[in-house]
Image (cartoon, rainbow, N blue to C red; front, side, top):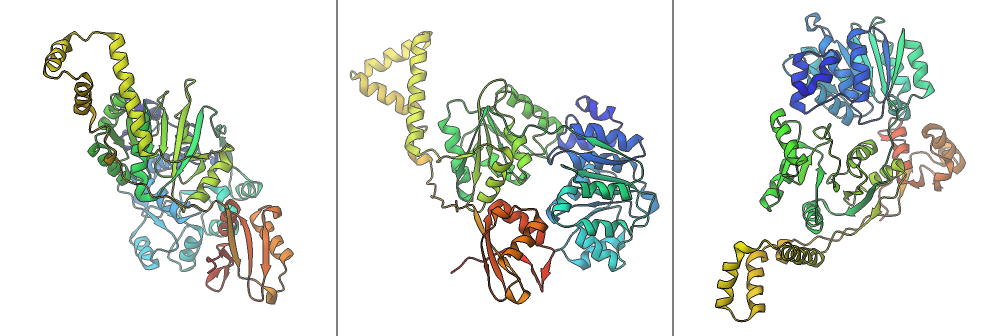
Length: 527
């Protein structure tokens, strides 16, 4: 584990290093380098500031897993996450780090069976990763007891604030013991979160990582609109039209990686995959082959791609659009290095245009639409490459070993054009066959960039258009100028806002209910 030397120097034991090697980690990220030793050897509470996608989960998980005392039989740590997706993701990652430690790490969140979660907690849990609403529910039912915690971790603190969870955090903290150690992690640290820290933390230190640049001028960023079932065909066309394709294809899950690699190999491409279940030895061999350009295609998940340092990629393909804008930046940053321009291509389905707008807003650079290369264009590009290759061979000479075969062929056929056509057919018929490619269906994506929202308040609630705008602005911090077309009816209202602002508003109000429904939600399509 020589390549994990930097992790070892942070104070991690061999058991943890083995788990890191299995997951393909090579060296700590800046937030990990700051946080791990502070948690292992210090005793202060910590406020960690770093962007999403920089390894915060490992930063707090690794030292906590090292220090937990299982013999107490009590719940040792709780991690609060703003969404159930993040809670599941954090729990899965913590479990992958805890291999061989016999610790029970359980996610709890709304939407999953309450009875199942009760059963898991009663059986005995060492670490819980939960969403605030479900944690409070289980506390109130006296199922979850937080009086013997060693660690209290708040993940994505700024998102918690944006989603209206501040009072919930305070409520949960009121049920915890005073002598626990606290960790707040966030991309930004709003004053409300800092006030919570001052109120509930003892002696604390702030560990901040310098914000990364959010784009690169040497990366040409484009997107293709394709249906899910046409993504693989589009990928093959991109590879085939490029004369020197050398890139990474990013997928969301290890199963997606395996499927794409298998289909690429079946179609004759030399591709290999990287994901969390691949052994360290296999990973090292694969990376060496890729860096040496023995293979030109690497298919990977975000986690498995950590630590890949290749300076001259021609392409990064987002086969699956990243969940976070920061992940997009991290992916495409692998092109456009060493002064060479690279290309980042993102596939979006008809339902993903909103995500693209969010990414574009963060990177502050146009991600322009292009069309998937047509079959005739690809065949023409291949023919030109063949002609170019033949011209280079003629210029280079060194054809002696083929002269005898050439004379034999000429002796059999007097028509040189017929002869040359036969040679080309024999060598390139499969390569130039249009039937190798499948049709790609045209996609219609909503480009208005607007969403219509339903508000469960109306004239009977003494609401006016101005009052609705004021309510939304106050709670969500969305600018009033973004809210258009407010329609107020007797029992409900509507408004129209851009996609990105719509997401913010819906997330902000999803905990505020009107009966069984959220106070504000996306309106159903009008007939």
